[in-house]
Image 1 (spheres, rainbow, N blue to C red):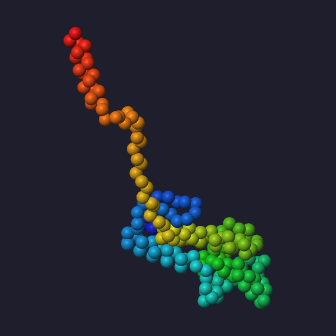
Image 2 (image 1 turned 90 degrees about the horizontal axis):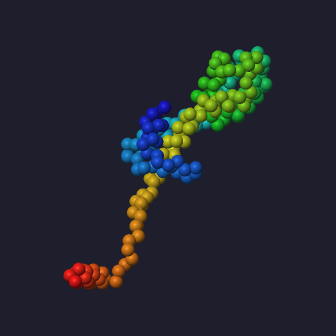
Image 3 (image 1 turned 45 degrees about the vertical axis):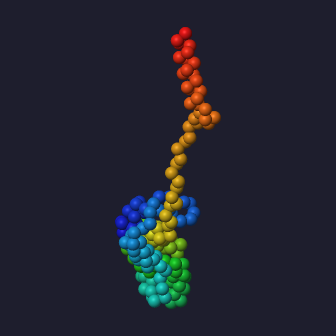
Amino acid sequence: MDRNVDIELSRRLVSFRPNSGPLEMRREMTLQERSDVEARTAALELWISPFGPDERGEIEASIVAMLAGFRSMRQQGEDIDSMVAITCAVLRDFPAWAIKKTCLKIARREIQHDARFAPNDAEIAGLVRDLVAPYRKNFEQANALLQAVVEPKRAAPTARKIPGPPPGDGKHGQRVAADIVARKAGSSS
């Protein structure tokens, strides 16, 4: 967890999260902020990337070690080879570290499961998916920050016009002067 990128930066910058399309930010990221987000995205991408061919042997060994702890799974030869190959195929989209960690937790009985039976491939995949989920979420969030746009400048609200007297004919002053003269003439009589 990188608190600055995973939490704080989003809080400071993101002004709107639309249902679709890019996030809107209050301002552009500084060069340091962008560099931090790019580094975090690259690091997280490594953590969520599927295992490679060079890691397959380690994955197979972890699966075999996990299955060996279940008496009902003590097959040999081609049976175990087929089972491991199928499990590897089901887990092909997950990173090696998460698969190995999940297999170890299952073998140590650190995961709630009926100890008489080995978990099926879907259960193993679900456990690995749950383990990878926070990394994937943080990756998607950091990537969304890199794709975000600065919110458009909204026009300041205009003052509401209060209706005034209708435009005059330009002779208001003459009428006022004539009214004053008439009043004076009426009061002197």
